[in-house]
Length: 125
Image 1: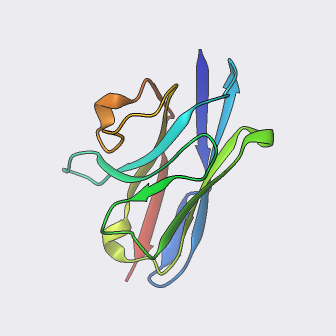
Image 2: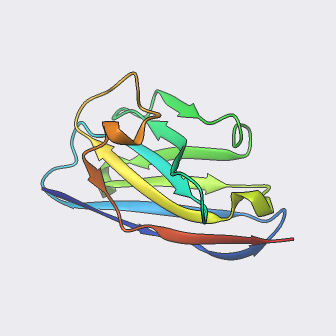
Image 3: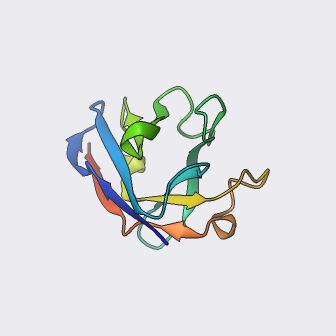
């Protein structure tokens, strides 16, 4: 089993930045494909970004492209989500998720086997 723990959420003003971390523990994180999702109140959980094990392949939702950057440090078993130019509509609980191998449907939450507990991000206007 792999446990994922998110951190770094908080309250920030519009235009500000936050960096979320997703730390893995337990069974090896080796080879894992990792995604970030978010869920706002009353809405479905939606895809935000994803990254391959090597870090060479990344993908973003159109709504965050150019503002968010996903990266990883495999030596630290940690994936990051740098969020810049935040908007009130980015307010949500952010979750990281992992699966052992690449899926071309990485944007679907059902493709992931492991989930963290989430971290709240609130952007004030």
